[in-house]
Image 1 (cartoon, helix red, strand yellow):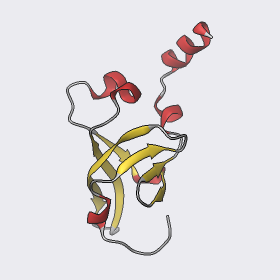
Image 2 (cartoon, helix red, strand yellow):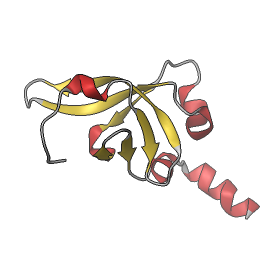
Image 3 (cartoon, one colour):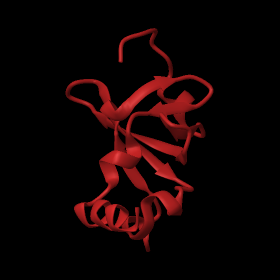
Length: 98
């Protein structure tokens, strides 16, 4: 993402939504690559357990790769989060019930 530089701390506390409007979580921290001086991930807490299911059971949160971020404004918009997280078994179950 190219654009104006902003403080990293400005991301903390922002809500994260998928590109189709599903709440994903809230930014708690950022993952940095100090060698390349760039953000590489967003640490989320208060995650949507309906979205992540068993993947977050017993965990405090998740880290999303920063290259999934489409836009940062009042909220953070990430792309295709639901499709990227589906397992082949979940896709197969969905086809069976459809």
